[in-house]
Image (cartoon, rainbow, N blue to C red; front, top):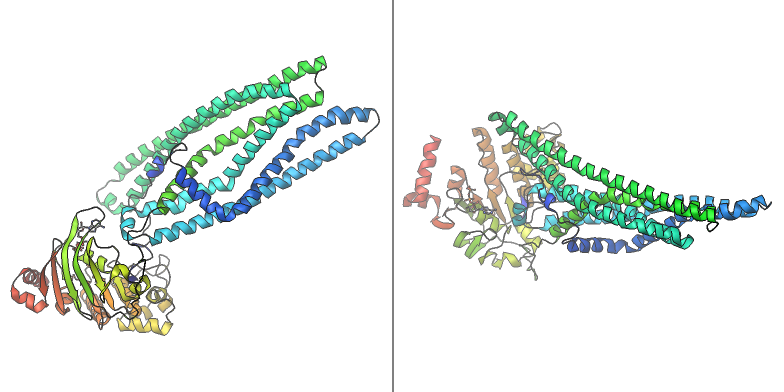
Length: 614
Ligand SMILES: Nc1ncnc2c1ncn2[C@@H]1O[C@H](COP(=O)(O)OP(=O)(O)OP(=O)(O)O)[C@@H](O)[C@H]1O
């Protein structure tokens, strides 16, 4: 990210899976029993806009199952009424029943297709909404959040978690709803059709419930183990791949392979256990189903022999009994994705519940023409709940001044810069721009007034021109070229294979650190802020390259207030004023020449610097 305004599109750019990119919390995701309310609230809120369509889908589910369940009833009517009538020379009843059966079968097919289409529409709308919400919300959250929440975790929210929800919405919910409606209608039809057969089925429900409960409990524990094992495999993989230089430099290949092998073996074992449970559940269901069919057939058969039951009813009862337990198999199949979706929803809900610690002002104050006067009013600051990093910093920077911050590593220089760009809010005191507390400045004006250029000079995918234009969206090509000329990068860009249209992403040209820095200067120049906050690159450029960057920087700084975390002696010596920061305190403040003359800390630094250049 470079020259991004004070609320950047992302803390540090997409960044790819972070070092610890795996998402261990997956494994700890709440189960079904505990804490599923925020996720349900989230689900309810995304379903609200499509509730009409969701209800229509539910109605279609019921109708399609009515058509399915009608089948055995029609078979019974055909056998018990149609066949005898045909024997007596009247084909009409059998024809009617046959026609009804074909109609029911066609209706069941058409309605099932309609269910798939309707539920897909609902699920796509819900997913689109959730995806957009997660993206917008994550972007709105402050840097403190982004530092706490690794980019790997954010990527998981947007990918695997939304995928888990998609899997459930795409097939799982309709399968579960269809199964539940089918079981209910089948049970009711059987009871209505023939109570004794219905009672046999009800008796069989008890072991079915016990088996399902056993499966749920066991599968939940195993599911968590599988997720933990899989997360560990991913973490190990990402860690090894992102640290490949260190792995190869220290000959860690064999050790990494051993660790990875052990983790994948653990994952295999966990998956095998989980599949074994599925197998046992399946076998138990088949057994219960077959025994139920046999019992219905036996009880019914004896009654048919006694003349208490019609053959057609017995056939229908057997068909119903056979169908009754089938949906439970689907429950087994979808149970893991159901759990995974609930855990994912929970994590998405908790991400969406994150509140920015740098809130937009309730009554924003407009600053249309920022002069660039900065004031730190007795500012104290620390990150999160951490220790105080800046202690009572009191500072006035008149508009147009170039201020260089120097000091040892960890002194608090970047922190001063980040507060000025309002990446964070102060703990006590205030940072003011043109006399207005940053917390009250309209975000849009702050974004235009204060621009931060960071060391990493982040380039977004797209052309060089696109990257410069980020400074001022909608800028014309001549404006972009003028900005590039101003910071001295035009010749370089013009010399690229496709000039300003050269892609700078992985498919295009790879710019060097110094070249990226210059592009980011052009971007900032185009943005033309009153205040420029700049973290000077520490990268050691070759001398001619350094010269070009130095000149570009000088042109960029002209006519605006600049706060620079300086790493080059030339930058410091060209500044109007130098601030030496140590342990979060300003310990020296004055013009470079005056500070050198004073013989204090800066004079020491200056001497070291010069010695290192010799
Ligand atoms: N995001 C953060 N969360 C917690 N602590 C932080 C964070 N960033 C910096 N710190 C701490 O704040 C202190 C000041 O850090 P800061 O980055 O401002 O120093 P610096 O002077 O810019 O150092 P350097 O020259 O190495 O960049 C350090 O103790 C650092 O550990």
